[in-house]
Length: 507
Image (cartoon, rainbow, N blue to C red; front, side, top):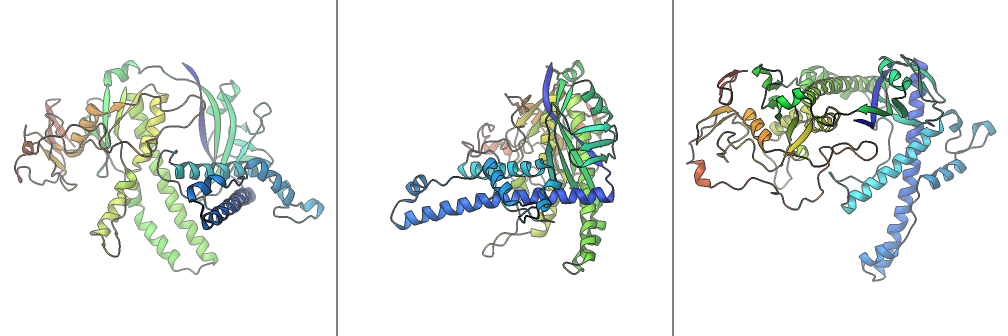
């Protein structure tokens, strides 16, 4: 099925030192435009709040005062006109807030105005409760060194100015050609054959690298159903964790049961020695000095390397899952709740704060939300489906063979022993089998073919009707047996019987 999708192709840039300085200058202009637009919005908002406060002081109820006061909120068209009147021009020696504007592409400013409108709308929708996902905070100004350096350029698709002059060079409007560290041969062929049209490009800096994310409208052959190989493989349950990156209910490689447990690379832990030394050096520098800037770049470079390694590992795993199985089943994990700090308050201080902080760091290093986000669009691309298990279903505490539940199972119990049928297996494998059997495929497609937003791990309702919707019916407590029937166990190098296959599985 031929379908148009929006797809971004990310390339590593290899700019010259002079070009790198110009890229930083363009990022600064984008930051300036965003702050200018946000300041106009905040000024209007403060005026509205002052009028509402005056009415409340006069005895008007606050709800009625909010409805009566109408202060127009400036948007991109009005902000752009005001900006043009106040920007100035170095060519005519007129002073202003941005007299060098003619040296920068106009879309650097326009895209920043659009981003400010979007940030304000996201906060307002989240405040009203009409936006799904976590609460969005009040928009803040961007500060150099604290926000991500980036800018976005658009062009007329009928007269494209963003184009690849060669497979190793990208031309940016009003900037010039920038050499690519990667090869754009694949995307260049799609553009030459009319199967891809460049919509925009976002240039950003991560660590010591510059990147260009080219957004294209691509005509793709999306399969309407899984392939024969995917249908034969069926559904796979994926239990994301810390000890193992993922525990699968079926082997990732056919007949190789060792691949049922995907090892956790622990990229952050591997870089922790270098990172600790770099952060110690940073803490010993003087604020505002050149040595401090150099030390900050070193810390940022290490963090960026960890991010790249993590992304590469996740892309490999998620693509294998999306291309080898007809349905990929995952849990609806509340990562924000899992990684909430245990510090507590002054009145009620937390316990085991240091251990909980280490656990939170390990959970975030596995990037569970990113794994689900990648599975959401990759299953759509490769003809498979994504199934999600309800957040409140006790997958780790339920026996995957008979359905018996052990409510006393803790995080330290790495082996699940059923008190009814006697089966013993790794708790993650047991959870993966439960996820495979009880996850439900979403009725709507994960990705819209042209417009709209991708539904990912944050696409849940803001206020679910009940925390136990779709949860398995309660099991009588007498079925769990008396206390002490299932002792606390820790897993060794695993060698558990596999009742489904009738043979031993060694990990």
